Image (tube, rainbow, N blue to C red; front, side):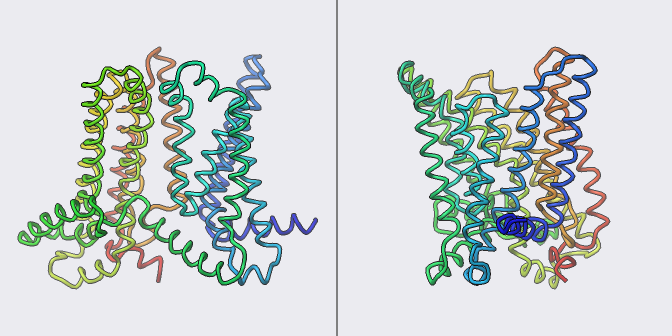
Length: 479
């Protein structure tokens, strides 16, 4: 084996299997399931004498790209950035070059796989832009989120904002070729930025990057509300009023939630949701008083991706709670010393009740707000799809809500992969049911997600009540 292959194998093992064994085992199981699904599909094609080698190759490329995207972005990127320290650079002089080569190579393999699955090379720069944004976001460079949003609105925005001839030019072969060159240059620049060279400057950058990655893990979907921003001030006012009321009542259940601080309170998501609704209503009023047909088309085209992005408020709602629990272990330990905790044996029941009440309430309110905005900005045709996606997002969010918080509780790579796999199976079941019934899959998806949520919550409720008292969280795993 050549020295380059030995370096690559060693780096891959350290950044994936050794850093997160449970996540890597989950990815291995997912690879087995994907391979089994493709084999079964090929067997059905042979049985029906309808062998389509091109379709089978596209499915294989799509499955491989999907698995590689999860492995690269959930495990390799973060592990490789931690590995790129000045000390390791001294011990392994080729390490930084290998890390940059592996990051760029993984990006290229993912992009090529999804392009092959799509069967159209014109999607290469858009797919590459999305995957580059994901790689940057997983490394706590939040500017990557903009790159993840841009590809989905590329073609609709140009066609809505420009005359047809110019819009076709911006989405044609020449424009996509130029965009491909820009994306390739961006990848080369970004990998050098993500993996700085040694020296004093590297020490400062590494410290700042590790701090950002830790904040990313604990605050990505739960921003601190004690900052001086406008949303933080409004959320704190609401939280302070609720806290004063609950302190006067001295009820043990609500006090369990207050131990998580403002970051785990419903007022955080409420303040963000109120801001989005205000923006949506402002756009609706602007459409009502404007006769500009192009402005109407742009708003309607952008309403779909915008509402889809807002659905992440439901999808990551429980991640906000889990991150707040990780940040407030000291407060939880202090609460256990006070009479406000109540009966220790009933802690998990009270906490589970409060978590369910807050999460279900936020789910219902967020869904109603998104449906209202969808009807105002996109028309009634968006309501069925938006409702189904809200139901599916809520079901996925419930996966990490009622868990053994004293042990390995909360979200992890393995749990996120299992939740994603279950969501894919529900989508496949809804598509199959819709095809058999000759109807839209959206009502089926909503019904399946709600039924899955009921079964999931019932099982998780029993598991959480049987676990050790939750506070302080993860004390058994850390001991």
